[in-house]
Image (cartoon, rainbow, N blue to C red; front, side, top):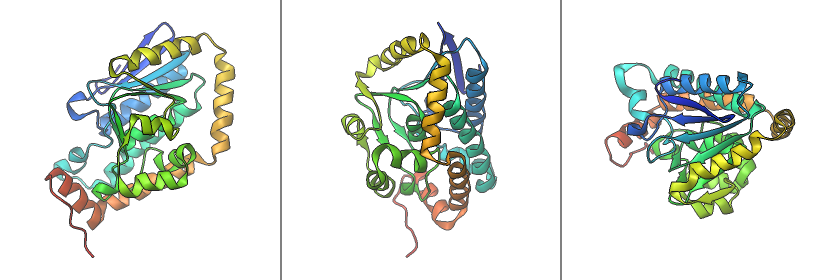
Length: 259
């Protein structure tokens, strides 16, 4: 158990909780590291036969912590490379482990939070939640596996629409587009996910793992795309566009990009 990501094993189900509710569970360096530690723990523990990933508080995950990225006067490019290295390694471990992973999306998911929804084997979404990539809205590019997983889940044109327009998907739209498996009342999301996890925990874990890896292999070269995502978002964040987009977001004003 760590400060920013909690792991609680209940009857062979590991509940992994993103635990920065005061920041809408945005990802900083500590959370990136802690999420990888949580994934490795779930993968290594023979008592864990299913995993439920959820968020503390009202949000699931609002993506990267932009304020944390620019605080302290440190260069943003190496910071983002380090953050995405941990985040992407965690995603690979969740996708490759034997235990089925269910995202209990208790509130809005944005940015890399969408990647955490897409990487899960199954996803239950709160009826009042929304899904938004938000990257280009702040002058950045996708990470968290979104550029790899979303086109395969919703189709290339719809994925590009989300990237370019940053429009938010409602829960019914996310279900209709195939991004999630089920929509549940806000207060019932975790319970629904736990019911499914309990059933899967009684199943053939080894067969589940082999089936997961077959499906992951059929998608193509995940790790190569994650490396490209990491390098691209880090370079873009350090560019004039990226600096302006992040600054404008934090100052609550419209960004002015050079023409």
